[in-house]
Image (cartoon, rainbow, N blue to C red):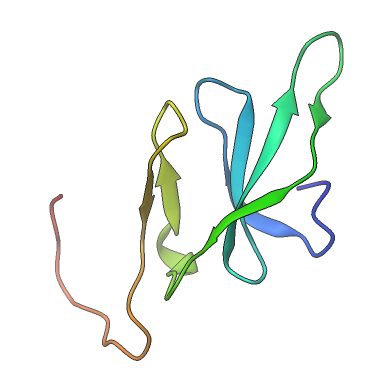
Length: 89
């Protein structure tokens, strides 16, 4: 995403459309204000919300609720074995 000096991945844009969320390369969950008024999309200054721990990037690392206020992270503790099987939440 533009505006992150070292890049980022897994961007999510909740329905409200005023913020976008993504992971930076240091595993911080980052928010970027998005302004869509007029004919152009303008991005604000990225700011880290919190650092994730044990984020599992390959499994769809996170999702955000439609209102952009809650996050669900795919995470394992450091050194924890990866569980096998299906889980329902």
